[in-house]
Image (cartoon, rainbow, N blue to C red; front, side, top):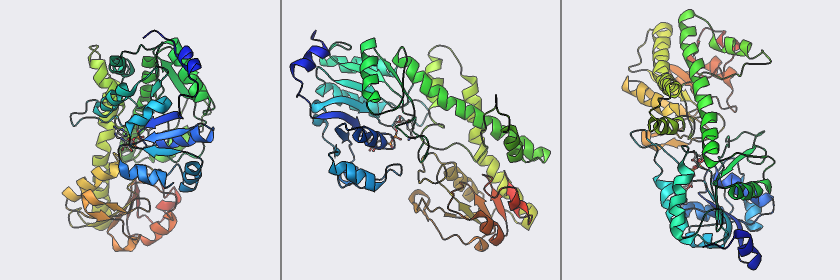
Length: 433
Ligand SMILES: NC(=O)c1ccc[n+]([C@@H]2O[C@H](COP(=O)([O-])OP(=O)(O)OC[C@H]3O[C@@H](n4cnc5c(N)ncnc54)[C@H](O)[C@@H]3O)[C@@H](O)[C@H]2O)c1
Protein backbone atom coordinates (compact mmCIF):
# COMPACT_ATOMS: atom_id res chain seq x y z
CA UNK A 1 0.00 0.00 0.00
CA UNK A 2 1.81 3.12 -1.18
CA UNK A 3 -0.91 5.75 -1.57
CA UNK A 4 -0.33 8.68 0.76
CA UNK A 5 -2.89 9.72 3.36
CA UNK A 6 -3.20 13.21 1.89
CA UNK A 7 -3.91 11.81 -1.58
CA UNK A 8 -6.48 9.39 -0.20
CA UNK A 9 -8.24 12.15 1.70
CA UNK A 10 -8.18 14.48 -1.30
CA UNK A 11 -9.65 11.73 -3.46
CA UNK A 12 -12.64 11.17 -1.20
CA UNK A 13 -13.16 14.06 1.19
CA UNK A 14 -16.72 13.03 2.14
CA UNK A 15 -15.70 9.50 3.10
CA UNK A 16 -16.01 9.82 6.89
CA UNK A 17 -18.98 10.49 9.09
CA UNK A 18 -17.15 10.83 12.41
CA UNK A 19 -14.16 13.07 13.15
CA UNK A 20 -13.11 11.31 16.33
CA UNK A 21 -14.04 7.86 17.63
CA UNK A 22 -13.01 7.27 21.23
CA UNK A 23 -12.66 3.63 22.27
CA UNK A 24 -13.44 3.28 25.99
CA UNK A 25 -16.04 5.56 27.58
CA UNK A 26 -14.60 5.91 31.08
CA UNK A 27 -12.94 8.60 33.18
CA UNK A 28 -10.69 9.52 30.24
CA UNK A 29 -12.92 8.80 27.24
CA UNK A 30 -16.04 10.70 28.26
CA UNK A 31 -14.32 14.04 29.14
CA UNK A 32 -12.42 13.77 25.84
CA UNK A 33 -15.65 13.24 23.97
CA UNK A 34 -16.99 16.41 25.62
CA UNK A 35 -13.96 18.49 24.68
CA UNK A 36 -13.87 17.34 21.05
CA UNK A 37 -17.64 17.75 20.69
CA UNK A 38 -17.54 21.25 22.20
CA UNK A 39 -14.83 22.14 19.67
CA UNK A 40 -17.35 21.30 16.94
CA UNK A 41 -16.00 17.85 16.04
CA UNK A 42 -18.35 14.94 15.41
CA UNK A 43 -17.65 12.37 18.11
CA UNK A 44 -18.47 8.70 18.61
CA UNK A 45 -17.79 6.76 21.81
CA UNK A 46 -17.13 3.04 21.29
CA UNK A 47 -17.81 1.10 24.47
CA UNK A 48 -18.31 -2.63 25.14
CA UNK A 49 -20.56 -2.15 28.18
CA UNK A 50 -24.03 -1.91 26.59
CA UNK A 51 -25.48 -0.41 29.77
CA UNK A 52 -23.01 2.48 29.51
CA UNK A 53 -23.74 2.90 25.79
CA UNK A 54 -27.47 3.21 26.51
CA UNK A 55 -26.88 5.63 29.37
CA UNK A 56 -24.63 7.83 27.23
CA UNK A 57 -27.14 7.90 24.38
CA UNK A 58 -29.84 8.97 26.85
CA UNK A 59 -27.53 11.81 27.91
CA UNK A 60 -27.03 10.35 31.39
CA UNK A 61 -23.49 10.79 32.59
CA UNK A 62 -21.83 8.37 35.02
CA UNK A 63 -18.60 10.40 35.02
CA UNK A 64 -18.70 13.14 37.65
CA UNK A 65 -16.51 15.50 35.57
CA UNK A 66 -19.12 15.62 32.80
CA UNK A 67 -22.53 16.66 34.17
CA UNK A 68 -25.61 15.07 32.58
CA UNK A 69 -26.88 18.51 31.49
CA UNK A 70 -23.73 18.95 29.40
CA UNK A 71 -23.76 15.39 28.05
CA UNK A 72 -27.48 15.66 27.24
CA UNK A 73 -26.90 18.84 25.22
CA UNK A 74 -23.99 17.25 23.33
CA UNK A 75 -26.06 14.14 22.57
CA UNK A 76 -28.82 16.34 21.16
CA UNK A 77 -26.14 18.01 19.01
CA UNK A 78 -24.91 14.66 17.63
CA UNK A 79 -22.56 12.97 20.12
CA UNK A 80 -23.21 9.22 20.07
CA UNK A 81 -22.12 5.99 21.70
CA UNK A 82 -22.06 2.51 20.21
CA UNK A 83 -20.79 -0.98 20.98
CA UNK A 84 -20.22 -1.69 17.29
CA UNK A 85 -16.55 -1.61 16.32
CA UNK A 86 -17.55 -1.58 12.64
CA UNK A 87 -18.45 2.08 13.04
CA UNK A 88 -14.73 2.77 13.41
CA UNK A 89 -14.43 2.42 9.65
CA UNK A 90 -16.26 5.73 9.29
CA UNK A 91 -14.05 7.68 11.66
CA UNK A 92 -11.08 9.90 10.80
CA UNK A 93 -9.30 9.42 14.11
CA UNK A 94 -9.48 6.55 16.60
CA UNK A 95 -8.45 7.46 20.15
CA UNK A 96 -7.87 4.54 22.54
CA UNK A 97 -8.71 5.26 26.20
CA UNK A 98 -8.85 1.75 27.68
CA UNK A 99 -7.71 0.47 31.07
CA UNK A 100 -4.13 -0.69 31.63
CA UNK A 101 -4.24 -2.59 34.95
CA UNK A 102 -1.61 -4.73 36.68
CA UNK A 103 -1.89 -8.51 36.82
CA UNK A 104 -2.22 -10.21 40.25
CA UNK A 105 1.60 -10.57 40.07
CA UNK A 106 1.82 -6.78 39.60
CA UNK A 107 2.96 -7.00 35.99
CA UNK A 108 1.51 -4.90 33.12
CA UNK A 109 -1.71 -6.37 31.78
CA UNK A 110 -2.24 -5.03 28.25
CA UNK A 111 -4.78 -7.68 27.30
CA UNK A 112 -7.65 -5.16 26.96
CA UNK A 113 -5.61 -2.86 24.71
CA UNK A 114 -4.27 -5.70 22.57
CA UNK A 115 -7.73 -7.22 22.06
CA UNK A 116 -9.12 -3.81 21.05
CA UNK A 117 -6.22 -3.06 18.68
CA UNK A 118 -6.75 -6.43 16.97
CA UNK A 119 -10.36 -5.38 16.37
CA UNK A 120 -9.23 -1.98 15.10
CA UNK A 121 -6.67 -3.63 12.77
CA UNK A 122 -9.51 -5.55 11.09
CA UNK A 123 -11.19 -2.23 10.30
CA UNK A 124 -8.11 -0.12 9.60
CA UNK A 125 -8.26 1.74 6.32
CA UNK A 126 -6.13 4.28 4.49
CA UNK A 127 -6.40 7.69 6.09
CA UNK A 128 -6.96 6.53 9.65
CA UNK A 129 -5.19 8.17 12.58
CA UNK A 130 -4.86 5.94 15.66
CA UNK A 131 -3.80 7.45 19.00
CA UNK A 132 -3.20 5.55 22.23
CA UNK A 133 -3.90 7.54 25.39
CA UNK A 134 -3.74 4.77 28.01
CA UNK A 135 -0.85 4.91 30.47
CA UNK A 136 1.77 2.28 29.67
CA UNK A 137 5.49 1.44 29.46
CA UNK A 138 7.79 2.87 26.76
CA UNK A 139 7.60 0.74 23.65
CA UNK A 140 3.90 -0.19 23.81
CA UNK A 141 2.73 1.95 20.88
CA UNK A 142 5.45 0.46 18.65
CA UNK A 143 4.41 -3.05 19.75
CA UNK A 144 0.82 -2.25 18.80
CA UNK A 145 2.05 -1.05 15.42
CA UNK A 146 2.98 -4.62 14.56
CA UNK A 147 -0.67 -5.62 15.07
CA UNK A 148 -2.01 -2.72 13.02
CA UNK A 149 0.39 -3.39 10.13
CA UNK A 150 -1.06 -6.90 9.80
CA UNK A 151 -3.76 -5.03 7.88
CA UNK A 152 -1.24 -4.60 5.07
CA UNK A 153 -1.25 -0.82 5.56
CA UNK A 154 1.98 1.08 6.18
CA UNK A 155 2.40 3.53 9.04
CA UNK A 156 3.25 7.12 8.12
CA UNK A 157 1.98 6.57 4.58
CA UNK A 158 -1.37 4.82 4.70
CA UNK A 159 -2.27 5.49 8.30
CA UNK A 160 -0.85 7.37 11.28
CA UNK A 161 -0.09 6.15 14.79
CA UNK A 162 0.85 8.19 17.88
CA UNK A 163 0.86 8.15 21.65
CA UNK A 164 -0.67 11.04 23.62
CA UNK A 165 -0.96 10.36 27.36
CA UNK A 166 -4.01 11.49 29.28
CA UNK A 167 -3.43 13.62 32.39
CA UNK A 168 -6.99 14.04 33.70
CA UNK A 169 -7.34 14.78 37.40
CA UNK A 170 -10.95 13.85 38.23
CA UNK A 171 -12.99 16.76 39.67
CA UNK A 172 -10.14 19.26 39.35
CA UNK A 173 -12.10 22.39 38.42
CA UNK A 174 -9.06 24.43 37.35
CA UNK A 175 -7.21 21.92 35.21
CA UNK A 176 -9.50 20.07 32.85
CA UNK A 177 -9.01 18.09 29.65
CA UNK A 178 -9.15 21.24 27.52
CA UNK A 179 -6.49 23.31 29.29
CA UNK A 180 -4.04 20.62 30.41
CA UNK A 181 -1.28 20.59 27.76
CA UNK A 182 -1.22 17.45 25.62
CA UNK A 183 2.08 15.67 24.94
CA UNK A 184 2.15 13.94 21.56
CA UNK A 185 4.74 11.58 20.04
CA UNK A 186 4.15 9.78 16.75
CA UNK A 187 5.87 6.82 15.11
CA UNK A 188 6.93 9.12 12.24
CA UNK A 189 7.10 12.91 12.00
CA UNK A 190 3.95 12.85 9.88
CA UNK A 191 2.21 10.82 12.61
CA UNK A 192 3.18 13.39 15.27
CA UNK A 193 2.01 16.25 13.05
CA UNK A 194 -1.35 14.64 12.32
CA UNK A 195 -2.03 13.72 15.97
CA UNK A 196 -0.95 17.19 17.12
CA UNK A 197 -3.36 18.72 14.60
CA UNK A 198 -6.22 16.63 15.97
CA UNK A 199 -5.58 17.75 19.55
CA UNK A 200 -4.95 21.40 18.58
CA UNK A 201 -8.50 21.44 17.24
CA UNK A 202 -9.83 20.98 20.80
CA UNK A 203 -7.07 21.36 23.38
CA UNK A 204 -5.35 24.66 24.24
CA UNK A 205 -1.71 23.54 24.19
CA UNK A 206 -0.01 20.66 22.43
CA UNK A 207 3.61 19.70 23.11
CA UNK A 208 5.26 17.51 20.48
CA UNK A 209 8.04 15.07 21.39
CA UNK A 210 10.29 13.03 19.11
CA UNK A 211 8.80 9.56 19.62
CA UNK A 212 5.96 7.62 21.24
CA UNK A 213 8.50 6.21 23.71
CA UNK A 214 9.39 9.73 24.92
CA UNK A 215 5.68 10.48 25.42
CA UNK A 216 5.09 7.16 27.19
CA UNK A 217 7.95 7.78 29.60
CA UNK A 218 6.81 11.39 30.16
CA UNK A 219 3.50 10.15 31.57
CA UNK A 220 5.22 7.60 33.80
CA UNK A 221 7.70 10.20 35.08
CA UNK A 222 4.79 12.43 36.14
CA UNK A 223 3.14 9.66 38.14
CA UNK A 224 6.39 8.33 39.59
CA UNK A 225 7.23 11.87 40.71
CA UNK A 226 4.00 11.95 42.70
CA UNK A 227 4.42 8.47 44.14
CA UNK A 228 7.99 9.15 45.32
CA UNK A 229 7.15 12.53 46.86
CA UNK A 230 4.07 11.17 48.62
CA UNK A 231 6.24 8.35 50.00
CA UNK A 232 8.71 10.92 51.29
CA UNK A 233 6.07 12.77 53.34
CA UNK A 234 4.50 9.49 54.43
CA UNK A 235 7.85 8.41 55.84
CA UNK A 236 8.26 11.81 57.48
CA UNK A 237 4.78 11.48 59.02
CA UNK A 238 5.84 8.27 60.73
CA UNK A 239 9.02 9.89 62.05
CA UNK A 240 7.08 12.98 63.21
CA UNK A 241 4.82 10.75 65.26
CA UNK A 242 7.82 9.35 67.13
CA UNK A 243 9.28 12.84 67.57
CA UNK A 244 5.91 14.19 68.71
CA UNK A 245 5.81 16.71 65.87
CA UNK A 246 2.86 17.63 63.64
CA UNK A 247 3.85 16.66 60.07
CA UNK A 248 1.05 18.84 58.65
CA UNK A 249 2.45 21.90 60.38
CA UNK A 250 5.92 21.13 59.01
CA UNK A 251 4.69 20.58 55.42
CA UNK A 252 2.59 23.76 55.57
CA UNK A 253 5.59 25.76 56.79
CA UNK A 254 7.91 24.28 54.14
CA UNK A 255 5.36 25.21 51.48
CA UNK A 256 5.86 28.90 52.27
CA UNK A 257 9.20 28.66 50.43
CA UNK A 258 8.45 30.28 47.08
CA UNK A 259 10.98 28.20 45.10
CA UNK A 260 12.53 24.72 45.13
CA UNK A 261 9.79 23.05 47.20
CA UNK A 262 6.55 21.46 46.14
CA UNK A 263 3.99 20.47 48.73
CA UNK A 264 2.83 16.84 48.99
CA UNK A 265 0.61 15.61 51.78
CA UNK A 266 0.80 12.40 53.81
CA UNK A 267 -2.21 10.09 53.98
CA UNK A 268 -3.48 6.52 54.47
CA UNK A 269 -1.92 5.31 51.20
CA UNK A 270 -2.16 5.75 47.46
CA UNK A 271 -5.41 5.42 45.56
CA UNK A 272 -6.90 5.75 42.09
CA UNK A 273 -6.18 4.06 38.82
CA UNK A 274 -2.83 5.81 38.25
CA UNK A 275 -0.33 6.45 41.03
CA UNK A 276 -0.45 3.01 42.75
CA UNK A 277 -0.23 1.18 39.40
CA UNK A 278 1.60 3.08 36.67
CA UNK A 279 5.10 3.24 38.25
CA UNK A 280 5.23 -0.57 38.18
CA UNK A 281 4.84 -0.52 34.40
CA UNK A 282 8.29 1.08 34.29
CA UNK A 283 9.77 -1.21 36.94
CA UNK A 284 8.74 -4.18 34.81
CA UNK A 285 10.12 -2.71 31.59
CA UNK A 286 13.37 -1.65 33.27
CA UNK A 287 14.14 -5.27 34.20
CA UNK A 288 14.42 -6.05 30.49
CA UNK A 289 17.37 -3.64 30.51
CA UNK A 290 18.95 -5.16 33.68
CA UNK A 291 17.97 -2.02 35.54
CA UNK A 292 16.28 -1.76 38.92
CA UNK A 293 14.09 1.28 39.57
CA UNK A 294 14.85 1.54 43.28
CA UNK A 295 13.06 4.83 43.94
CA UNK A 296 9.85 3.34 42.58
CA UNK A 297 10.17 0.17 44.64
CA UNK A 298 11.01 2.04 47.82
CA UNK A 299 8.14 4.50 47.33
CA UNK A 300 5.79 1.56 46.73
CA UNK A 301 6.96 -0.08 49.94
CA UNK A 302 6.48 3.05 52.07
CA UNK A 303 3.10 3.91 50.54
CA UNK A 304 1.77 0.35 50.78
CA UNK A 305 2.67 0.28 54.45
CA UNK A 306 0.51 3.33 55.25
CA UNK A 307 -2.80 1.49 55.86
CA UNK A 308 -0.94 -0.73 58.36
CA UNK A 309 0.50 2.34 60.04
CA UNK A 310 -2.98 3.91 60.17
CA UNK A 311 -4.44 0.78 61.73
CA UNK A 312 -1.86 0.97 64.50
CA UNK A 313 -2.69 4.66 64.98
CA UNK A 314 -6.38 3.80 65.47
CA UNK A 315 -5.37 1.03 67.86
CA UNK A 316 -3.14 3.38 69.89
CA UNK A 317 -5.82 6.06 69.98
CA UNK A 318 -8.37 3.58 71.39
CA UNK A 319 -5.84 2.25 73.92
CA UNK A 320 -4.74 5.60 75.21
CA UNK A 321 -7.98 7.55 75.08
CA UNK A 322 -10.47 4.83 76.04
CA UNK A 323 -8.51 1.89 77.40
CA UNK A 324 -10.11 -0.16 74.67
CA UNK A 325 -8.66 -2.56 72.15
CA UNK A 326 -9.59 -2.60 68.48
CA UNK A 327 -11.30 -5.94 69.05
CA UNK A 328 -14.94 -5.25 69.74
CA UNK A 329 -14.69 -1.47 69.18
CA UNK A 330 -17.21 0.27 66.94
CA UNK A 331 -15.28 2.25 64.31
CA UNK A 332 -16.81 4.63 61.76
CA UNK A 333 -14.75 5.47 58.67
CA UNK A 334 -15.63 8.86 57.19
CA UNK A 335 -14.85 9.11 53.46
CA UNK A 336 -13.84 5.94 51.64
CA UNK A 337 -13.34 7.12 48.03
CA UNK A 338 -9.69 7.38 47.05
CA UNK A 339 -9.83 11.16 46.97
CA UNK A 340 -12.05 13.96 48.19
CA UNK A 341 -15.32 14.93 46.51
CA UNK A 342 -15.48 11.98 44.10
CA UNK A 343 -17.01 8.50 44.31
CA UNK A 344 -14.12 6.62 42.70
CA UNK A 345 -13.13 3.59 44.83
CA UNK A 346 -10.39 2.23 42.59
CA UNK A 347 -7.38 1.18 44.69
CA UNK A 348 -8.74 3.27 47.57
CA UNK A 349 -6.61 2.79 50.71
CA UNK A 350 -9.88 2.73 52.68
CA UNK A 351 -10.50 -0.77 51.33
CA UNK A 352 -7.26 -2.06 52.83
CA UNK A 353 -7.93 -0.21 56.08
CA UNK A 354 -11.40 -1.78 56.39
CA UNK A 355 -9.85 -5.22 55.88
CA UNK A 356 -7.10 -4.59 58.46
CA UNK A 357 -9.45 -3.15 61.09
CA UNK A 358 -11.89 -6.01 60.61
CA UNK A 359 -9.10 -8.58 60.89
CA UNK A 360 -8.22 -6.97 64.22
CA UNK A 361 -11.80 -7.53 65.37
CA UNK A 362 -13.22 -4.01 64.97
CA UNK A 363 -16.88 -3.55 64.06
CA UNK A 364 -16.74 -1.31 60.96
CA UNK A 365 -19.26 1.12 59.47
CA UNK A 366 -18.64 3.91 56.99
CA UNK A 367 -20.13 7.20 55.87
CA UNK A 368 -19.44 8.59 52.40
CA UNK A 369 -21.88 10.86 50.56
CA UNK A 370 -20.26 9.84 47.23
CA UNK A 371 -20.18 6.05 47.79
CA UNK A 372 -23.62 4.65 48.70
CA UNK A 373 -22.44 1.05 49.08
CA UNK A 374 -19.43 -1.25 49.23
CA UNK A 375 -21.04 -4.58 48.24
CA UNK A 376 -17.76 -6.55 48.34
CA UNK A 377 -17.50 -5.62 52.03
CA UNK A 378 -21.22 -6.03 52.71
CA UNK A 379 -21.48 -2.38 53.77
CA UNK A 380 -23.74 0.56 52.93
CA UNK A 381 -23.03 4.17 53.81
CA UNK A 382 -24.61 4.98 57.19
CA UNK A 383 -25.75 8.31 58.55
CA UNK A 384 -23.07 10.50 60.07
CA UNK A 385 -23.79 9.97 63.76
CA UNK A 386 -20.31 10.14 65.38
CA UNK A 387 -21.59 9.73 68.95
CA UNK A 388 -22.58 6.12 68.22
CA UNK A 389 -18.98 4.98 67.72
CA UNK A 390 -15.93 4.35 69.88
CA UNK A 391 -13.77 5.97 67.23
CA UNK A 392 -14.33 7.97 64.04
CA UNK A 393 -11.55 7.74 61.42
CA UNK A 394 -11.38 10.43 58.73
CA UNK A 395 -9.95 8.55 55.76
CA UNK A 396 -10.95 10.88 52.92
CA UNK A 397 -11.82 14.51 53.58
CA UNK A 398 -14.87 15.27 51.43
CA UNK A 399 -15.54 19.01 51.60
CA UNK A 400 -19.28 18.61 52.25
CA UNK A 401 -18.67 17.28 55.78
CA UNK A 402 -18.72 19.59 58.80
CA UNK A 403 -15.56 18.52 60.60
CA UNK A 404 -15.89 20.98 63.49
CA UNK A 405 -19.27 19.41 64.31
CA UNK A 406 -17.88 15.92 63.85
CA UNK A 407 -15.14 16.65 66.40
CA UNK A 408 -17.71 18.09 68.81
CA UNK A 409 -19.97 15.05 68.58
CA UNK A 410 -17.36 12.26 68.47
CA UNK A 411 -15.71 10.90 71.58
CA UNK A 412 -12.55 10.03 69.64
CA UNK A 413 -11.36 11.04 66.15
CA UNK A 414 -8.38 9.76 64.16
CA UNK A 415 -7.75 12.26 61.38
CA UNK A 416 -5.66 10.84 58.53
CA UNK A 417 -6.11 13.95 56.32
CA UNK A 418 -5.74 16.93 58.62
CA UNK A 419 -9.40 17.68 57.93
CA UNK A 420 -9.89 18.91 61.50
CA UNK A 421 -6.97 21.35 61.16
CA UNK A 422 -5.08 22.78 64.10
CA UNK A 423 -8.25 23.83 65.92
CA UNK A 424 -9.66 20.32 65.83
CA UNK A 425 -7.29 19.13 68.54
CA UNK A 426 -8.84 21.44 71.15
CA UNK A 427 -10.73 18.89 73.26
CA UNK A 428 -7.91 16.31 73.20
CA UNK A 429 -9.98 13.73 71.34
CA UNK A 430 -8.34 14.13 67.92
CA UNK A 431 -5.40 12.00 66.89
CA UNK A 432 -3.72 13.02 63.68
CA UNK A 433 -1.55 11.12 61.24
N1 LIG B 1 -8.82 7.87 35.46
C1 LIG B 1 -7.83 8.73 35.47
O1 LIG B 1 -7.80 9.64 36.28
C2 LIG B 1 -6.70 8.61 34.45
C3 LIG B 1 -5.80 9.69 34.32
C4 LIG B 1 -4.78 9.61 33.36
C5 LIG B 1 -4.63 8.45 32.60
N2 LIG B 1 -5.49 7.39 32.78
C6 LIG B 1 -5.27 6.21 31.94
O2 LIG B 1 -6.25 6.18 30.91
C7 LIG B 1 -6.61 4.83 30.61
C8 LIG B 1 -8.12 4.67 30.72
O3 LIG B 1 -8.47 4.86 32.08
P1 LIG B 1 -9.94 5.22 32.56
O4 LIG B 1 -9.78 5.72 33.96
O5 LIG B 1 -10.65 6.08 31.57
O6 LIG B 1 -10.60 3.75 32.56
P2 LIG B 1 -12.15 3.40 32.86
O7 LIG B 1 -12.12 2.06 33.47
O8 LIG B 1 -12.80 4.54 33.56
O9 LIG B 1 -12.80 3.33 31.41
C9 LIG B 1 -12.52 2.36 30.48
C10 LIG B 1 -13.79 2.06 29.70
O10 LIG B 1 -13.44 1.15 28.65
C11 LIG B 1 -14.49 0.19 28.52
N3 LIG B 1 -13.94 -0.97 27.83
C12 LIG B 1 -13.26 -2.03 28.36
N4 LIG B 1 -12.85 -2.83 27.36
C13 LIG B 1 -13.27 -2.29 26.19
C14 LIG B 1 -13.12 -2.63 24.83
N5 LIG B 1 -12.45 -3.72 24.45
N6 LIG B 1 -13.66 -1.80 23.90
C15 LIG B 1 -14.34 -0.69 24.25
N7 LIG B 1 -14.52 -0.31 25.53
C16 LIG B 1 -13.98 -1.10 26.49
C17 LIG B 1 -14.93 -0.05 29.95
O11 LIG B 1 -16.23 -0.63 29.99
C18 LIG B 1 -14.89 1.37 30.51
O12 LIG B 1 -16.10 2.05 30.31
C19 LIG B 1 -5.79 3.96 31.58
O13 LIG B 1 -4.62 3.54 30.94
C20 LIG B 1 -5.45 4.91 32.68
O14 LIG B 1 -4.25 4.55 33.33
C21 LIG B 1 -6.53 7.47 33.67
